Structure formats: C-alpha cells, structure tokens
Length: 254
Image 1 (cartoon, rainbow, N blue to C red):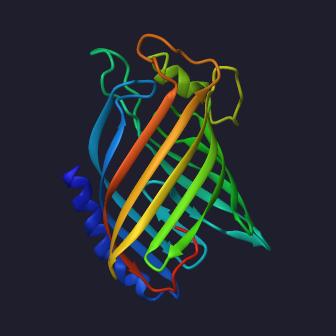
Image 2: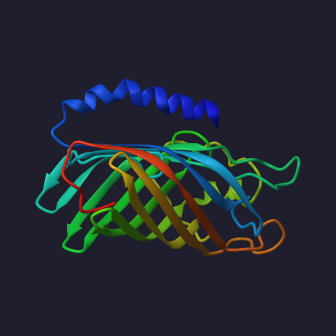
C-alpha cells in the first residue's frame, strides 16, 4: 500500500504541470480509512487504508480510482458517450486456505450518459481484460451539489451486473474456463446487485478536504446464501483527508 501511495504521488507531481494549461481542472489526492467485507457475502469486516486520486480535465475527461476513467468523446445536447475504464478490486480475506482467489481486474468499455435537471443517468458496459475476463455493466443515477460554501454532497442509486464467469470464480471458488472475446450474455446465475452510495466533502482549508462515503449493495439472483457466503449485503464506509487543487469555479456536483 505504501508503494502504491508513493507511485500515485509521483504520477501526480508529473501530471500536475499538464493540468496548468487546461481551462478548467480539479485534482484530489490523499487517503481514506475504509471498512469493507472480508469477501463478498461475508458477515466479517476488515479495515484498510486506500489511496484517493481523482481528477477532471475540462468538462469531458475524468479519472479516479473509485469511479475509473471516462472521456465524453461524443456529445449531442444533454447526451454524451465515449470510452470508459475501471479497476475492480477483489476482496479475498477469510476464504479457505487453498480456495480459489479471484484476481483484481482492469475493465474497459463504453458509456452513455443523459444529463437531467436533477442529476445524471448513465449506462456502462465493460469487458475485463484480466482476472475473470467476463463482462460487467451498470445503470446508475447520480445527483448532488454544494449545499454550503464549504460542503458538497452526492448520492448514487445503481444496478450493477457481472456475467456468470464472475460468479463461477467468486462464488464457485474455481477458475472459469477460457473464453473468446464474444459479446455479453445474460444468465440466471449472473452477479446482480442493487445499491446506493452517499458521499460528502468538507473544505477544511482552501486546499484540504475531509471526505466520507458510505455504500450499501444487496446481491440479487441465484447466488449461494450459506457456508462461505451467508450474507447478501455488501456495506463499505470510508473517511479520510485529501489535498484539493482546482482551476475552476466551484462545481455543482461532488
């Protein structure tokens, strides 16, 4: 974790001069303490320290460890679309000693977003380049804004999906068979969740923020409910401090 933080810090210092020429940009860098399940379906929780890195460049490019990176390459009125990439972290604590461990995955794909007066509706579809090497997608509604001069809040409601290759590896505890790059397929034993996320950022100084976030997801569909996976609820919570730089007026969303 310390190596990852050091690498993120180095990349931030290298990239910072490039942001100086942008008409509108923000950059957040720091760390949060997080409470998360030992593994999906576990009733045992663990604490860890995770980095925070989030940046926007103009109105069309955004990158963060939490939400991935996306580029609004095509725009038409209130609609936008383009490529998206995400990093999926696997929680593998408290599994059997010789049980299968699902690897973290890098996922790439595309998104379509619709802006409304009260928030944004977004659809994403991605393919994992490594790890379970399957398809995943999300349907989400995001809203939020600055409620006081020093406080921003945001909320998201979402449906998330991953194909049966993910459920076979994670819940079946075995490597999914090799597959070709074919398009997404939907089955009864796919991984499907419904959830909400609430976050807030409080300015402590002009360049320092206290950030907090809580998420709650519930697993749907035909998944194991006993043994290693006694719970269908996935809760996470985090709080920490980030350094914040901006070359823009205050944004309307957190």
